Amino acid sequence: MNKKIDELPTRRPKFKKKRATVAGEKVEFFSRDIMECIAEIYGRHDLVPHLKFAPERHYADADQTIRIYGEMHTGRWWWELQVCITIGPIITVADIPPESG
Image (tube, rainbow, N blue to C red; front, side, top):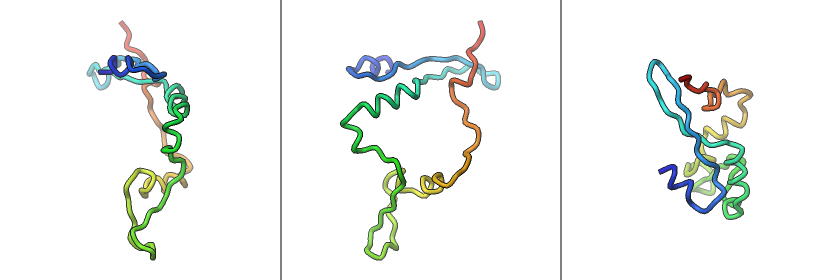
C-alpha cells in the first residue's frame, strides 16, 4: 500500500524502511522524513485553512457550561500540553540503529 500511496501525483516524501531487533524480535519500521512531511503539508494551499495551531473551547450553550469536544484541538489534552515545560524523552525511528548483517 505504501508503494501505491507514493505513486500518487504529489510531492509526498517517500517511505523509508528500517529493521531492528526489539526484545529479541525482528521488526520493521516505516517512516518518512518529518521535515519533508511538514513542507508538504504547509505547501498544500488547500490544507492551510484546516491547520490548527492553538487549542479552542467550543460550547453548546450561551452560558458556556456545556463543553463540546469534537476535534483534538478542542480537548483537554491540547490545553494541558500548552503549559508543559517538558514532555519527556521521545524515541523516533531515526534513533533506532539499523540492524547489522
